[in-house]
Image 1 (cartoon, rainbow, N blue to C red):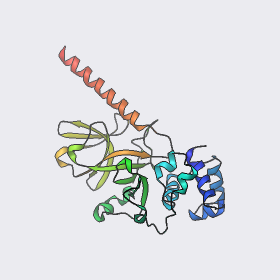
Image 2 (cartoon, one colour):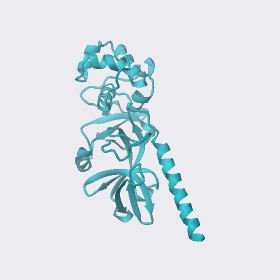
Image 3 (cartoon, one colour):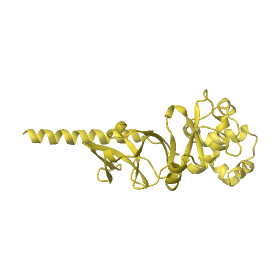
Length: 244
């Protein structure tokens, strides 16, 4: 049974709620909650997000860490989406705007979103984006529906070989950056998966991936490292052949 299953059961018991009462809070059935608690099914990331938000729990911790009763007792119930009252300078948890691909334009215009999620402050992220698309999928890649914790950066801070999100032609494109002189090529996990070419001096808004929240165990950093090593080997081979 994964951490999320145990956390749901422990949280429900701590709050003194029956499976039926807990289910009603999130438009689920008693059978749904029972299957989660017994480890026969995993809740969708949207469901997990709603539960974590309702009880003001760090989404990252709720998914990946088996929380103790003391951990859960330290969280207060959140009502009416009032997240600001639970944020303090001493808190290790912060609330981030939670947006989907369809909400990005509105978010950039208004500077706020209707939904928020709580995550550890250590991630240093500015927004939480629900990932769409399959171009970053792989054994340890990023799946559609995973939540990307992103940090807004300057174009001078873009890093070769790392995942970034760019606002280009009124759409947000997320991919691995490969910098060649003054040009950035965005790719997916597979080498042949080319998404977009961008001129560095044309970059307007860009975010760097800080972390990923997923209901599955992922190690996307390993994938990126493997890709970078492969690219360096190809570059070295090309250099050596030119010297012959």
